Image 1 (cartoon, rainbow, N blue to C red):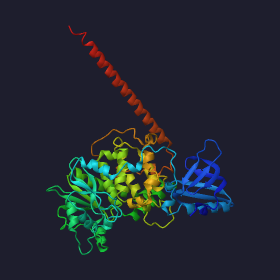
Image 2 (cartoon, helix red, strand yellow):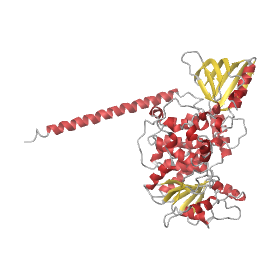
Image 3 (spheres, rainbow, N blue to C red):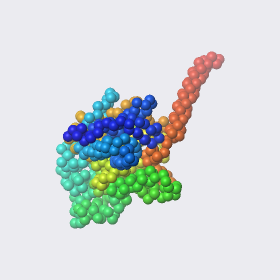
Image 4 (cartoon, rainbow, N blue to C red):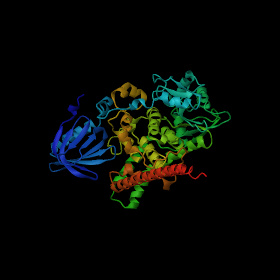
Length: 549
């Protein structure tokens, strides 16, 4: 299919662009296969380059012959285009709708994008399982890399190389996979260096109403326990939802079959509820006609902060079991690709200082989200403005980033990256020139040859000139476990995402720059003090022989 077939009017003059906190611009609107572009001949005006994949929905309005298109973006921006001529306006609106709803992955912009920067470090080669396993091998010899899933037939949503207990053979892994939803048998998520405890993740067991069991599955998770130790199974569903799953062939681990494990049920909501929550939250944030009480009421009714609290609470529980109780943990929900990954990745941020660095956080996203099979393509197909009927869209990864921001705000000196880094990741999951978040699983990305045909987001982010924007000036490496508060007064609305297009950040930006200036000045003074101390010590050394009788 040619993009030209979908573009009815490729260009329109005299178009007026309205954007939040920016001056109105008049110029020429152009539609390409992947971008909506508005350029102006006026001096000092910033062009608009908007990816069609960033467009969530559009609205058309007409006053006489003047048409207006309201473009609502997946990054929650709302822009307005005033287009002279009703026919031109209708043609452009129709073209935008067609180009922004293409389903074919091979037609997406990452396959056509050619970077203007030199790729110094290939992001596709940065986080490979073999390298991560070498780190694990330096700490313990109880695990091995299995190729049981090399052709993705045992578990379509797992990567080809899997870290499993050394004593469990591949045949047992295949049998355990047949007992878990989607073949997602328990595999290593995190090894706690301090005490040797581990966190594993999986999907629900297929016990069904008959109470089916699998001895290979039991043996697999028991292989992670130390002698005389108990473990915890954290099920991210309520007991009622887990019971209902049995009627559909799913279920949970029976105490009689897993006597060394204690099961705990939490209440992290499913994807359809989360999507509804995001829509209500954004609606509340965009509605500035109400009083403060009414606004707070709408905010509370969205339940967004409740979801943040529940996810953080569950992650803290997993971290507490591992670090304070010295127990291994298995986390799962239904499919093991959403709430499970939120909990395992947040628990690692709490426990492991490496995950609070930029490289460590990138590795975490690769390991616990991309390689672990979170369906980014499905979950991020629509955002908060879409008029389409929700299919499997849900802000699962955005909720994870919100939770990270809450911890970052409570421990501002413990993270190497800043809020801008998290906002950038949110934007690129919904629309990007890079191939990192395309597809739903590793098998799909291998088939699409993303590593050969597209550029990795990490290739761009890790360039020194880009990294500078994402570094936290307050960062001081902290090797301790950090315990975030989940009290209601400790959890705030993430204004950097939900209010950034509704409220100017000029004052905050100025305050941030002043803080950076003070920190740099403080470092200069500290260097001077150290230099003077060295000079003084040298003078005292030189004087001491003269004072000897």
